[in-house]
Amino acid sequence: MSPSLLRPLKVIFAGTPEFARVALEQIHASGAEIVLVLSQPDRPAGRGMKLQASSVKQYALAHGMAVAQPQGLRLDGKYALDAAGAREAILAADADVMVVAAYGLILPQWLLDAMAAPHTDGRPRLGCLNIHGSLLPRWRGAAPIHRAIEAGDTHTGVTIMQMDVGLDTGDMLLQQALPIAPEDSTASLHGKVAQLGARMVVEALAAGQSLQAVKQPSEGVSYAHKIEKQEAAIHWSADAASICRRVRAFNPFPGASALLNGETIKVWRATPAPLAGAAAPGTVLAVDASGIAVATGEGSLLLQELQRPGGKRLAVADFLRGFAVQAGMQFELSASGVP
Image (cartoon, rainbow, N blue to C red):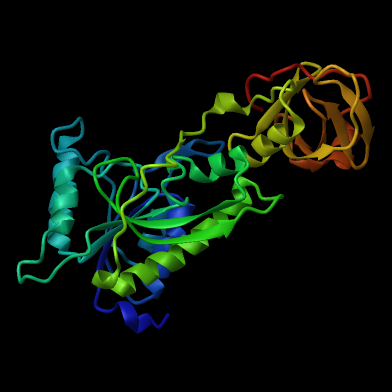
């Protein structure tokens, strides 16, 4: 798309992680004027737990964009002073549209109303547009990419949505499907969805008022609940295919966990295996350089990439050089904790 297509569109961008940074970069490259960036406050991260700026904030500062990091946006909430400051900055920016991507804060009614109201000279605004990583109404909520893989969906996609006060319930402006490859993890699919969402939101901004808003269907609604660390535990009594999907869905966070000889092992890559038998779930059936075959509630699972606590992710052949695994050993039926 030509950089001139979005000039002189004035955009407020609200987002936090890498998924959102990809969209901010594309909007910026398209020629829009980014008048304000909202991102979550800096968080402690890494071994030293030092405060780190979000991916979006880092990009914004590197390109001279104004940044605000309110802890909340509710004018009557716990962080009312933060919200009041953000409101002042948003109104002063006098933007044509707000684009939201994985921001992490719910937009209150005052903000939706401000971005829906026309400019003082009567020019219309485009409201608040959200880049959502699923084919709505499938997978509303916090973790649509993870849950699509976990559920065994063959496709996901992106919906550009006009935001309202509900949880991903707004009218749809654009939607495009994206196949989920059998080997896709959340890590690999995340990048594909981010790139698609970035292209689509630039298309939506260029189309502006000409886009036709479509209400979401009332059928087919599901919720992608936030991923919790305790979900990492592998339950070997489940079938091999569903365990494999969870391994893919929880890569890179929180990483599927399996307990063997008292040690918690992260499983980063696995595939259903042809070996089967009457062994109890969690029993090691065979070990070689191609993987560790483990009995499940239905079929067996071949573990291909593993990680010990404090160690690196290793292909199974390398992992076995430092951790002896033999046929007949028993994984516990579930694991607790993470490396």
